[in-house]
Length: 411
Image (cartoon, rainbow, N blue to C red; front, side, top):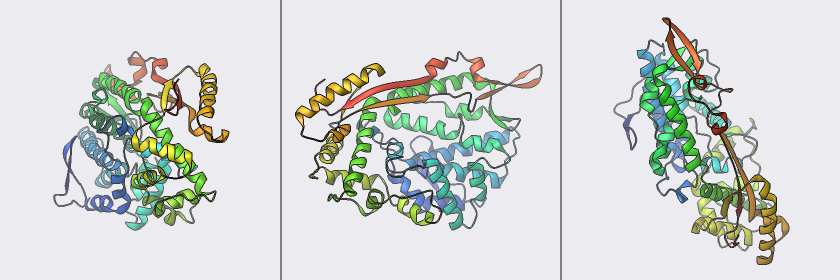
C-alpha cells in the first residue's frame, strides 16, 4: 500500500484521520466521492434536530477510520490481513454508501426504481475500477462477499460492522441524542476471528447489549421520529407530484440534473447505458431537490405548491400514532374534512392524507447472528448472544402505525 504524505482530515468525533494511501486519496478526490458532501446523512431530520446536517462524506471517512482500528486489533490477535487486503477493506468501506441518492434513504425509491443504493454503490465501484485500472478489484470482491476470507466482508456488512459503529455515534453526536452513543473502541477491541467468522471476545458481551439498546433508542428517537417521517413522506409526495406534472405537459421548474429523473425513466440496471446513467446520478444531490422545491412553492398546481411550502416553512403534515384498526375510519373522516376545505380531485387527496407503517428489527439472529467467543475447559467455544442476554424477541421488533394529514385539518 503506497502511503501518502501527511494527508489528514479533522473529524469532530475522532480527531485527526489519516488518509492511508495514494490510491485512497485519489478516490476521495474523485467527483463521484466528493458528491457525498452534498448528500445528507439523515435526510430531513434536521427539521427536528437542528444540528443533524452531517453528510454521507462525514460518515464514509469515519467508517474508514474505524476500519483502520479494526485491522490493527485483528493483526494484534494474529489474524493475517496483508497490505493488499487492508487497502481493499478501506476502499470498500469508504465506498459502501456511494450509491445513495439525494436525502439518503428518504428518496431511495422516488427517483430510481427497482434498485437499491447498495447495488448502485457496486456499480460506482466497478466504474471507478475502470478509471483506476483495476485497482479496486479486490475491494469489490470483498464488498460482494466473493472473497475467501468471509470475515473481511463482515467487517463491512454485518450486525457488528464498523458502518453501524460509526453512524450510531455520528448520528447521536450531530442530533444531540446522547442515548445513541456506543463504545466503538471497546467493541472493536473485542473483535476476533474464529472458524472464518467475525466474532466478539466474551468480555464484550455487555458492551454489545448496550450497543443494541443504543440502536433501538436511535430508531425510536431519530430514525423513526414521527415528525421526521412526516417530513420525509411529504418530500416523497412532492417528487411524485412533480414527476406526474412533468410528464403531463404541465410547466414546472427543474434543475437540469433533476429533469433527467423526472421526465425520463433512468434504468440503473441497464448495463449498456451504465456509465452515462452513473454520470447523471452522480450530478444529482440534495441541492437540486431543494432549489426545485423553493421554486415549486409558487407553481400554479395547488398540490405541488402546498407541499413545497410545507417543507420550506416547516409547516408539516400532522402525524399521529394510531392503532392499525383505527386507520381506515380516521382516514375516511379526515378525507371528508379535506373535501369540504379544498376543491381538489379525489385522486389528489392521497397527497394530503395517508398512512405510514414502520417496521424494524434491531437484531436479526436468524439472518446473521452475533457470535461470542469464550474459553471452556481451555477450548474455544462459540455461542449466539441471544443465549447469553435476556433477549426479548417482542421488544426487538419496532412496529408503528401513523396517520399523516394536512396541518389545516383539526382532528
